[in-house]
Length: 293
Image 1 (spheres, rainbow, N blue to C red):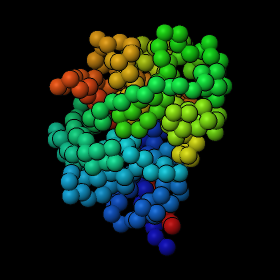
Image 2: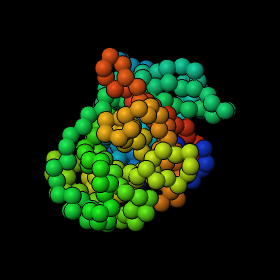
Image 3: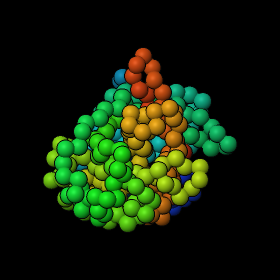
Image 4: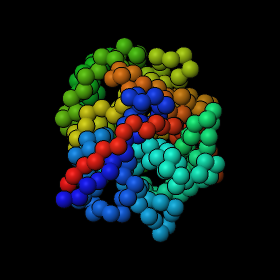
């Protein structure tokens, strides 16, 4: 039987008990893929990250939900890099390359107002049309079709992980959602394993631009992700593509409905005709757990 130290960090917040918790395993090279999946299942976080050595980048990150491996996870990246900074294994003011299944991505570490902030450049955004039944999608979210925004499209988007981006009319519509994610695969006919990311322009805080929620695929083993980095990134790209083309920076709030208050900063830029998406957030240490497998 092996004992595994799993560090719990909460991303996109500086307050313990808020934000989005992630498990961080510093010695990822010690475990097989099967063991990593078992550890993630026992840990029970929406994602657990395993930090490994890499021949092609400064480090490799492997991301596991309780149900399966993910190509990329924004909040778990923030949690992992923050943990490495706290442990003195990475330095503020530097840029590092991380190997993920979504590609090799640059990460900048900077100190702002006495706190370490992590900026991840996400994979190039992609979009696909949603061709499913809007009424069935509304039913799977516990709302009605009238709660969808009348002028913006529902589409699938990805900056590393596919999610259905669902614009809503109001904050009230966001608050009343009670998802049944077991229905997602039959509703999301184009990408049955995608998650669902509803958002609205109405916000809880006056300095926020968008309010989001994130509902997981039933294959992930979780239902709602409190504060989601990758989906926030693709939502910023969505705004550039379909909504506010001139806006370059978005503060996105999430988690208020479930007591996990957090914020993500998204910056959109263009380089050589390609859209670039940068996600920035901080984190806070919560606890250390010893798991046995």
